[in-house]
Amino acid sequence: MPYFDSHCHFDPAAPASAEPLLAAAAEAGVTRLAAIGGDPAMNGCVLDLARKHPERVVCALGFDRDQAELADGKLDFGRLREQAEDPACRALGEIGLDYHYAPETAHRQRALFEKMLALALDLRRPVVVHSREADADTLLLLLDFVTAWRRDLILSARPPAVLHCYTGGPAFADALLELGLVISFSGILTFRNAAPLRELAARLPLDRLLIETDSPYLAPIPYRGTPNQPAYVVRVAETLADLRPEPLPAIADATFANAAAFFAPSR
Image 1 (tube, one colour):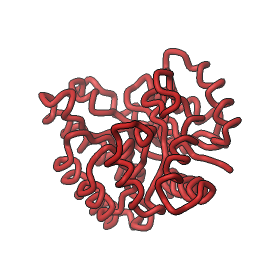
Image 2: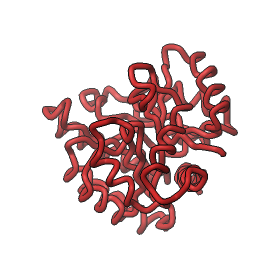
Image 3: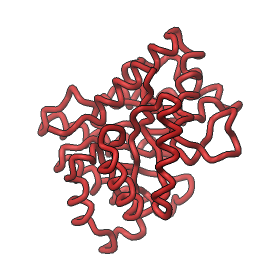
């Protein structure tokens, strides 16, 4: 059965390393994946990969929260727009807020996030969002984005955003679903200390779920301690099947369809 890894990263310093990872993914049944950018080097890397493998790879491009300190005239938004207009780019991301590691840059993170959301509206692209310890600000900015998405783009049937690698609580998840977003779970679901996350994943609507690796990070059990890779998204699907009433084929089919709809070409 086919799987879709909705969020993975590749090494821009070693672009050839992507090829064996794609081969291993195909062998595991991972026939589609979204390669995610976040800084100029990663953006170029994943765009090249998506152009090279259009039948298997789509990409998302953007300036992530760790680029916030460079936002004052040091980020080339013109170049990003040019790259994001490529049909291989199906979303803007990874973008968002992280107050865990860099709370002192919160103001600059918000300013960059707002700018990225405005660009996404202009380019008619959904967004791939990171949020950690920033629930309130994330929701506030996404509310404005979603309102404009529905009003100006008439795209209300298509999810405007995905909250990737979800680790938040149930209230945050419910608020995201109310906004029409989809939620993606990673290998963290398999971690021994993730019981509350598993409880949440068990009850959310299947038509609003994606699966991802966030590779090369967060390898699931039993691969902890090794670099993650797209092939391992199968373990995330298997874990969901253990938690939910749906069998594994239904989990794979639904999450594949959800990801394909999210990363569909923009109109």
